[in-house]
Length: 554
Image 1 (tube, rainbow, N blue to C red):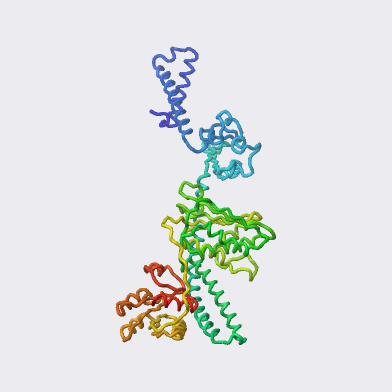
Image 2: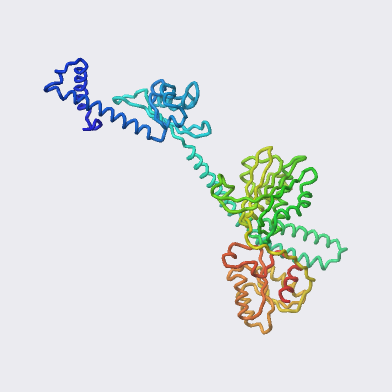
């Protein structure tokens, strides 16, 4: 029978017999183990073997436990310890046994203030503590030892390294915070896109009628200057909506393959004018930079907004540094810049020597309309515009900043792997009208009336409809030829592209020009690609519309 399976009474009885046998052997009383007492010697030998076996099993098990374990007495001296504890604190067993636990674990000359053993002695219950020492997190658990049902001053101390757990937990918190921020930004983006769309419609009316009034007023008339100021304000507002659309990733863009170093070099004069003479501009271009595909106007927006942001952060003299380089991000990189995106990127670093930012501000800088500038000095859309542009182009942005140590923006543009496209130059056509027939469709009645007046003024015959079904009916009943369909892209019953397809069945050869205040995700889901259709974005100048019409018809 195994030692561990004996009852307490059986064990005490066998121990008593073994003690008698051992005593007799020591005295040389050989006769004592002869006859009926002969089994006593065998009992003693069995007991010794069982004790040695149990001790070996206990020691092996004790050392196999991955957590550091030690048994301490009432004076907090270490009586026993396992191999894991030795490895954890890089000490040999003889450097641990007999020493106070705080000397071995904390390297101090007295118990630490929050000592879990002392708390356990007060409460009589197990105590736990997490401590960050020597660049690692350790979890300490102390359990009291009881003998015969009564508490003893001895205790078992278990120490576990939880550094990796803490890192994973911090990463999880960081990921959740980033997800919450992304969801919040996405909600605001949708709101901003919707506002910009409606606002663009109103601006189209203001600019359209304003241009008509301005042309009909004598330049010497005092009202001419008033109308001019109204148009300036309207066009500035149009720029503001473009920033909202860039933030919400709904801006209509014309991407081109560009070489970022060349573009920044050509923009240095513009950046210099924005930051002023007191601030030194340094540009260190990376060698062999990969091409990127993006609308050049968006790069202008990024550089201008970063330049203004850097200028306002610097008091007096300072430096703004721009650096470019190729970078490959993969899963093997520790702490990837953002969102676990991998692949080849062109990195644009924009660093200023300004005042830097606190973490509370840093967490909010990409929120639209958030600004630390004085009233009237900023809209709070600059950095949110950059955020939207990077998202729209499948890149991302990271910012690092410390108080009085400046700020660094890191922008990651995806490497373009296709064929390099030749640069194209726009040719401005002479503004002129025509005598063709145009079917105009817009569900915003005021805009429809405005464009109808404009087109008629330049000689066109205009058929108007406020919804697609009315336009289709006009196409079926109109006896003459309809040369061009000008329609809003987003309408309740069907989109502009679907309307054009139906009109083409009714009036073969009819051309289509689509207009909208923004390019929404809904349009993309419907399979409309702007590069595949003739498109003009609201609000537009009358010259742009008239030139576009002539290009399509001719």
